[in-house]
Length: 453
Image 1: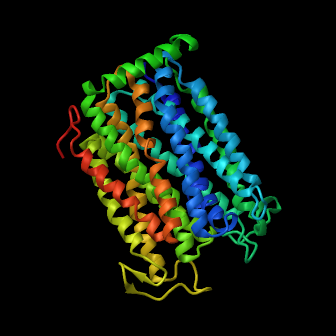
Image 2 (image 1 turned 90 degrees about the vertical axis):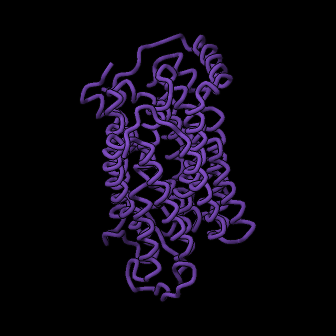
Image 3 (image 1 turned 60 degrees about the horizontal axis):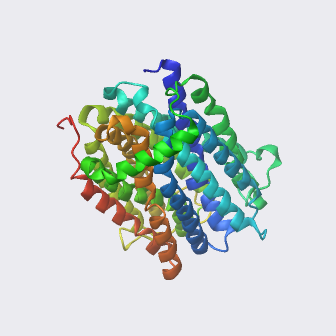
């Protein structure tokens, strides 16, 4: 079965639909808002956000392979995507009520964020598993890269919409475009920042519809009650016989490690900048726009490089750049770069990113944006290349497990080290270890039919 143009477009638009959750909520709008205005202070906010991310990651780690195995037996993917889309919508919309100063704001925000993350990640598992049935294998890299690029476009457009029309500065009351916020949203109570949740939910609802309407699903398999027993039995057999798929296992371990580092980088990049430079939503949002533009270019280009050279070289090169850029970010404070070279600190009223330290941080962020998309797009095509085709959803469940089984560990470590050291910099420094070890393990993976660079 191969999909027509409308079906492929519907699949690609899933990334476009879901990306605002990660752009607006996880990274650039709500997460820094939570750390700086909902939590007591930035250090406590970073620690709490890390633990909320850890809880969501643990739930996803436990359930992903089980649900993947059941879906392989049941056949259809769309019913599962629908169920988890509901969780995403409800969780994201609930963030609106996390008002600063209210006694319930912190636990409500943490719970709603965890629910949103669980819905988005599980919906992605089943959407990814549709890939092999849509295009020939030699076109998977282009399909995956185009999907990620469209995701970045969705994140960019939603971020521009938020900053230009919805999020107002608490100091001026106006948006980045100099306008009063739409709907009379009050910057003093963070209504614009909190609106990132409902906007992400509505955006997803609109743009996920083509997937349900036009993208072909796999034929129906076993009834759900039978599929549960068959899927669990198949999962158990797969785990017991995992030695027969040693190459896939090595890749899943590598992905488990470096994906955890990427989760940590996305979860704390905006929070870290907020604490180091005192950036508000306007600065972090502008930073996000730049990263999103470079990310879209990188994902689109990375898909072509994937088809030409294979996914493993793309992943390894991306990890190398991430390590260099992360080290650059950790070397930066408001008054120094490269671990001690003094520069003039930011001065209020000097303009956007006026200081040398801010511009260096911006440069490192651009590097991260350029390679994060290719890394994620090539990672999922690499799984298709090294996995048995008859159990692809199950292995995408294991892939989500590999991406999440320790994903609670990195945010938990960041949160714990941040709290113990009372330092955001110390907490974020643990992320680099995950990139280095993941790249080392990945060098042992063999890709069938891999092309030589």
